[in-house]
Image (cartoon, rainbow, N blue to C red; front, side):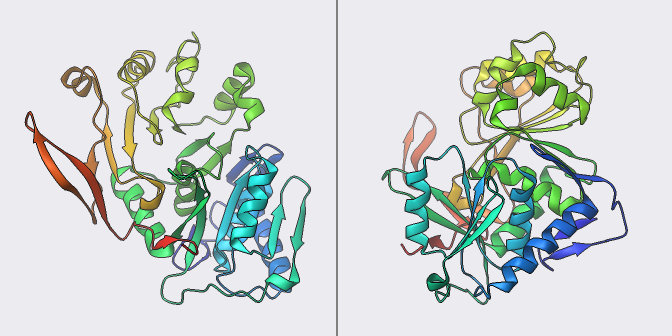
Length: 346
């Protein structure tokens, strides 16, 4: 079973219905249970007669309901706006005020709050609906809502299939909050390919023994995180391919991957791991370049690692570029179906 991002529904409903879909902080869901949970949330949202395109805030951390709410919103063409508990309450309220959203799904309190007077606002884009709005402060310090459309998400999914070799056998580690777009690797990955995702709360991530046992118990084979999360783990004598034989693919994004971190990772994991260094702004749907960091790459680039090759169906240009010792230095311009249609109301 998987979730089709173009049909906006679960498909192959009789296949792998009992397979693990989500291991959350408050329990597990099989694919059949995830479908049922999504249907329940959809039924509730439909009862409020929410206009298509009206943004829905989802607040929480690593709960089952968070994932199910995301899928329910995608199904109903309601842009979901993820807000993790790491954000202070004033930021959540500020974002809600910017959105003028009438719907908040609180996964902590297990309740849906509806402001009826705001439900008459319709932002629907008929030819290319918005899937999610990710708020980023950028350089201004003010929250800006990056709108990512279905076309961009499908383009991202196709890249995961062609360049990352994602299949139904992936068991993703999710550590990044859903309000950070790096989490789309595992969210879109497990949904599109019918695989599994293991959500890791802050409490678990901060307790190495519990975190290690969780990795081992679920046999996670695909790691997704920012580079800064892994160095302290690489210091442990148990974070290696001998103790974690299933783990063999590492995907990094959101920060610079350091040479020393990559070297230690390849020393600890001797099972021919795939170490993908990826890059891209939130406005370009998670990432737009990638490269597998091998020993040969480390030897060729001893001080700083390359961000890789541009994904198919996208182009990067250097604007106002100047030559500097054989290199072209300037501003990057990204063009492609993966680029956001713009900031919300901005």
